Image 1 (cartoon, one colour):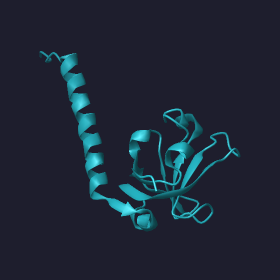
Image 2 (cartoon, one colour; image 1 turned 90 degrees about the horizontal axis):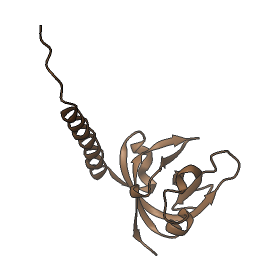
Image 3 (cartoon, rainbow, N blue to C red; image 1 turned 120 degrees about the vertical axis):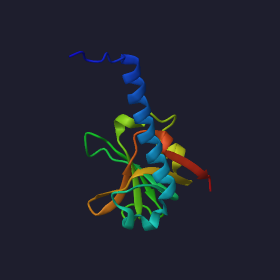
Image 4 (tube, one colour; image 1 turned 135 degrees about the vertical axis):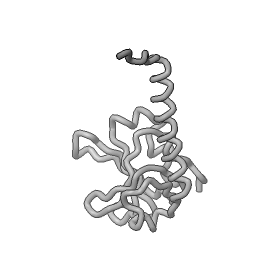
Length: 135
């Protein structure tokens, strides 16, 4: 029995195409799931684009990960939604997230999760946050 020869370039192209299709599907599903920050609870577990105003930004120093919290619509502890950026990922941003987003209306895309019964999206890359207005 003769086994077919597998071309490594063809395998890489196939894997690249598959990854791009999955990524495009996530972008498409985010386009289909768009919610304001005060309505995210009904979308927990889904990949969505959430829009709202970042009213305060806080960086915690209480843990090893020193996360930055973008609080939407109301300041902590009454925020309706938050974006979390871990300290190791802040370097991916051109400036500190406080400078980039505080006081601005933004759209953020990702999987909506619950942490201590509060909705959030964890962001590692600034491409998933878009400034809409600079109120």
